[in-house]
Image 1: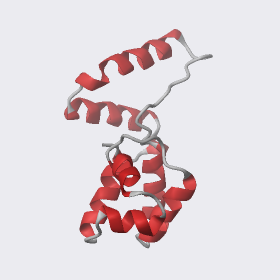
Image 2 (image 1 turned 60 degrees about the vertical axis):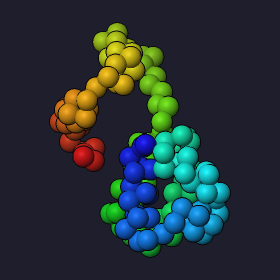
Image 3 (image 1 turned 90 degrees about the vertical axis):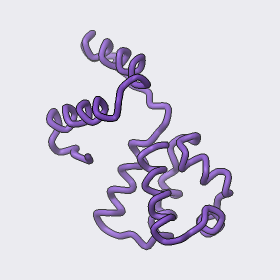
Image 4 (image 1 turned 60 degrees about the horizontal axis):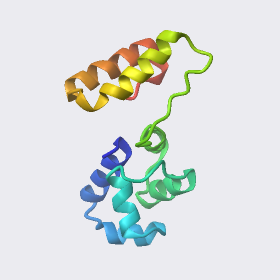
Length: 124
């Protein structure tokens, strides 16, 4: 599951909306919405994210947070390190190789390190 999928599922549950109801209202199939929630589909389009935000009548900061979660939720992230240092390439490849073995605590520690490196990008 992606952060975006987790948030959409939580919103649906909070509001007592079935997947079928939501899918019909935003103009997608229930299997597609299920795949999106479960991280089995790629990044949703900007247009679809806006339909979801409108469906839940979400405004301002929360709408921006959901759009950012969508941006950060591509289940097959690609990191282009061309033009960066060899250490950057090593980090990207080692992370790709080891991410499935990291615990939730390890993941949280890595996210905190990234937040410290760029405080303007805090989303945790």
